Length: 370
Image (cartoon, rainbow, N blue to C red; front, side, top):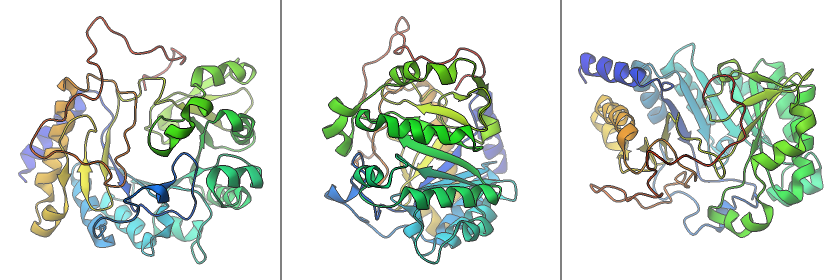
C-alpha cells in the first residue's frame, strides 16, 4: 500500500468533518445469558459459522489500523469475556494501535472464574461498557436470563478504582421502566455515563416491541426534574463516539445519554468499521462494501483492505440508500445476514428528498452535533 495513497485517503476522510474511524470487533456469538431482546441461542445459526479470528489476527489488524491513524478498538459479542484468549486479544489490540489508544469492551460484567477487571486492564483495556438493566436480582434475571446485577456492580466499582472509564448500557422496556431509572440514578454518585437505549424492532425483540417500546421523548418527559438544569457533557470528555447527547443533571457525578435508533436519526456521524467474528469488515450497513479480511491477513495485504474500507466510508456520503440517516440498526453482528457479492444492496429505507426531514428528536440544540 503506497504511503501517499494512505495519506490521501486519511486526509479526504478528515475533510468530510467526520470523527476518524474506529474498529468495532464482535469477538464471538456466544453468551452465557439470554436477554429477552437478544436471545442469541434461539437463532438457527447460533455459534460460529466458521473459524473465528485468532489473537494474532487481531494484533495484525490493529497494527495496520494504527498506520491509518486509528486509535480506538471496541470489543463486543456475544459475551467477549468467554473467549479463552481474551487477554491476548486485548493485548494485541493495545500494542497494535499504540500507547494512546482507547481499547474498550462491552460485557454483562459477570466475569468467568479466573478473569478480573485488573487482568483486563493490565492487558490494555482502558474503558468498559457494562450491560445492566435492573438492580434487583430477580427482575434482572427476568430480563437477562441469569447473572447477578450485584456482581456487575462489583465489576463496575473495580473498573472505576483502576481508573477505567465506565459506561452502563440499559435497554428501556415499559414493564421495567422504574428499573431503568434506578440504573440511571447510579450516575448521581458515580462518575459513569448511563446510556438509556431504545428497544429496536429487530430479531427476538420484535415479539416485545409493540408492548414494551418506550421512546426517548417519553422518557425525557418523565425525567423532566433531572434534566431541568442539566448541562451537556462533551462526548470527547466521556471518551464516547456513539450518537446521542449526554447530560449531567445538576450536582450529579455522572451523566445520562440516550441511544435512540428507533425514533431518531443517529447515523450521520457513523464511523465504525464493524468486523465480524470470522473477519468480515463492514464499513456501512446500507451498501455492499463488505470485505473479508482473512485473505488479506494470509497475503499480507491488509493495507489494500483498509484502502477499500476508507474509500467505502467516503462513498457512503453520496450513497442514495444512505443520505445521512438510518433508523434501524440491522443485526449484522454474528455473520447472520446474507449479503450479495458484487451487486449493490437495494435501498433499505424510503429515499429522503431534499425537502424531507428526519423524524423530530427531542435533543438539546446546544453543543456539538452528534
